Each structure stands twice: as structure tokens, then as C-alpha cells.
Length: 399
Image (tube, rainbow, N blue to C red):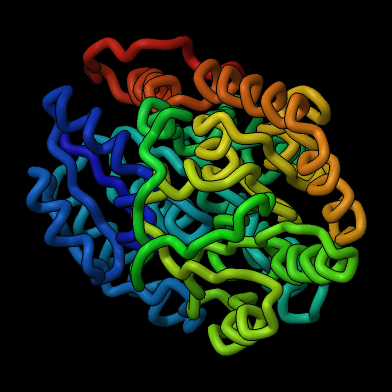
């Protein structure tokens, strides 16, 4: 069958949906990757997929351009005689579902990977956008042959309570999946950032890593304040930050600001890191003090690497971490609690080992890429008559 994977970012499709595309391709399906122009188009073609750059501005809000994009996508789906369109992230999910319905595509899947910055912000602009998105959800997620996929129970309840989609079309698939074998604790501990080798860490220092896009709602200010608190206490803790700015997101932290944090001696900013398995092999714990997530891939990667996790008790994060069992949960926007959790792990090696071991067991059992792919393949088979997939090991994610 011909299947379109559509997202507002080619990097997202490559980094988060590469395993899904590979599994579909291996099962004999024809894959068309659709996203705004970017550096990954050539990589898609080298893997045997078709690549179609879309006339799309990820952060665009011009209503005429957005309507034209939906028309363009509808024409593409008709011309290519697509059997199934799967859209990701809010804009990709909405536009993919709308265009798919207009084009008469047999199967439509809309994956909501997180509710975006305007669901976290109460500014006037965010409130207006929130109302508009709710309206678009209800319009786009109507009709037949549709599944709306969320990543955690809180988002499922929100969609149900606000009637953003009919209950019978809602599904949970927990995240994008991680190829856990690549993040085994015995992975090599040498590697490099985009700018050079991993930095030297002082002997005896406890190493904490926050891997995320440089967005304020990832909790960067709380991470910085925790670093300041422990530095004032004389604690030997190295705070690492791996990730790049996202200029298309209104909550992006300016690069000059992050560099200033490093100059103050509070954090070591690594920039974009391609070899994440090796980086996880150099640290003692992973922290993500986010304000809300879909289901954070970086926490699953850290768990697969056998590391103890520290994160906030918010939607998405608490779906990965059970407090005291496979990580530590702290209140949101509470740098003191974050600092205390880091100290607790630093002072208790047995606790670190126990939490890290349990985290890896959970990652293998619930979040491995094969499990996530199996969940999507079952959804595809439910929607499109004749969809056949090669068997994928592991149980289907629970609804």
C-alpha cells in the first residue's frame, strides 16, 4: 500500500518516526515522506522512500497560506492515490486528517505528540490559539476511517472530557518508541558533540544530563536554578545540557542566553548531540523538569541506558516514571525539589542502581520501538482492509 507520513519537520520524521517508516518499508509498503524542505530529504530517498517537500511554514499562522497548504496536501493525496495518511504533531495531525478526508483517503491517523506551548501558557494569544485548535480538532477529527492517537492517559481524558474527538476513534500508543538495544548500559562511553568531543568531567563529580530542545517549558530555568543551588552548597555536580534551539517555537531559549549560563560555570552546554547512546554512557542520571509532555523520548532513552530518572509529576513524564520505583518525581517549577532529588541520587549509589535497573526493565517492556510499531500496524489494519504487516515482536500497547 502507499502510505504518507506527514509532519511539520523533516527532522521529526527522521529522528522520531524512522523506525516506523523502516518497518513499513520492510513489510513491502510504499512510503511517501512529506514535510517542509530540510536536510533529511536526501536521507529519506537513500533509504528507499519517496520524499515530497511541502510548502509549509511550521510556525506559520497566515490563514490563506494554511488553507492553501491543506488544498495542496489534498491534491497530493489524490494524485498519489494514497491508501493511508498518518499526520504527526498538532498541525500535521489536523491538516493530514482534513486533507485525507477531502481526498477520500481510505485510512487516516492523527498522532498528537504533545499539546504545544499554547496549552501551557495563559497569555491572550495562547488562549485564542487554544480555542482555535480545539475547534480544528473537532472539525478535522470527524468522519469515518479515522484514529486519533495520543501518548498518555491525561491527554486521552482531556480529549474525552472536552469532546475533541469521538471516544471510539481515540487510542493510546505510548510515544514514538526507542530501539532499546542501542541504549544498552554497556554501550561505548566515547563519543562527540556536533562541535567536538564530550567535555572532560572533574573526577568524582556527579553528572546529570538534561537532553531536550532548548525551550523554556522543558524546565531549563528550574534546571539552571538547581545548578546554582548545589553550586552554592559546594556539591560536586556537573550539569550537562544537550540540545539545540528551536527558532520556530515561541518558547525557544536564545543561544546567547544558554552560552551565558556556561560562562557562569553553571552548566556545560553540548549543543546538538547525534551520538546519544554514547553520551548516556558518560552520565549518572537524566533529568527532565518539563511542564508537560506527550511521552518524552529522552526519558525512555535514559531508561533504556539503565540510568535513574528525575522528572516532574506532569502528564507524559509520570507515564514513564513511577516515583521511587524506576525514578524520582518532583513537583513542577520547583528547583529546590529538583536539587534535593539530585542530591539524593548522588548520595545513594544503591538507589541509583536500583532505579536505573528498574527503568530499563520498564523501557524494554513498554516503550521499545517494536511494541510501538506493532500498535500502529494494528491501527492501520483496523482502518484499511487488506493491510498486511510482517509480525513485529511484542504485545500491542494497552488502551
